[in-house]
Length: 307
Image (tube, rainbow, N blue to C red; front, side, top):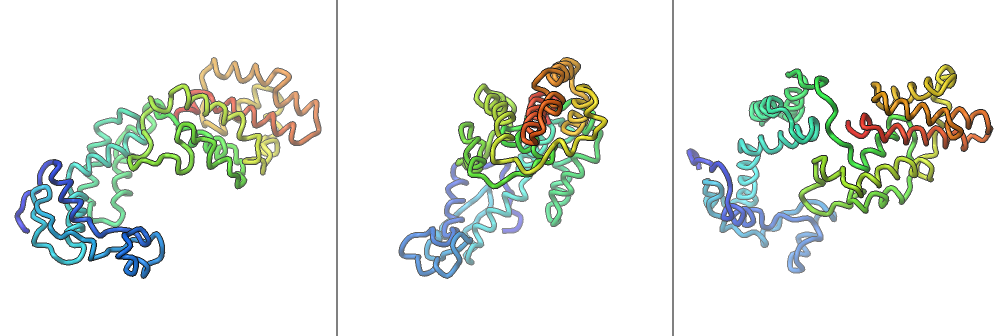
């Protein structure tokens, strides 16, 4: 097979040959009845190769003849090897990584560095780490551009929890709350994965769910295991401005727009703010609720929505 040239791309025939090459590759307890004895030798859910189900008639895959490979799993392994080492795979995967980090239109320089690192280290056990180093460290892009990647609804709520040190309690609600926009646990059933572009997650339904989760979930059984009042220094409680500045710094790390800051301070100066709750009530849950409401409002700023 030495010397065979790999095609630049694939076609329908390559897909057919792949299905033949990978036939017999399955998981235990997931095969046909006649193979039950073979499958039962492995724990449920683990990978299993069943020779009786393998079609060894695979021909040319992307210009490489698979027919001479007759050993168990050899044809499928060759398909994976060709695909993994193909330059198009490097471009495809690196672009997805760059889009995840830098937004829907990542810098071409970042992608180029990532592809070069992918190819240079494609046999290394830390290949992905090397790719990320090239993309994030070997160029000036990080920190020199505005935040442009929107957080998905589920990610947005977890960011609130992370930046406020709330402790999540086990609750069935977390398994279903985001299902309406297919962003809950295991709610995206397709093999393609969730969309990784802003347009999908900035739709009306996603935005509404994000806002609701910010102001509803912190008050339920999911996250009532910590107190934000204890985390707030006394100096920050001296004024609505100090309170907002402290929690903006905690949750975002830099200033929000002047309009957002004005709105947050005005809200905290009102009767529904944290300082009013501290003056009026000795009930810890009432005070905690006021803090979590403030955290939810901060999370609706564009500086928090975009990571």
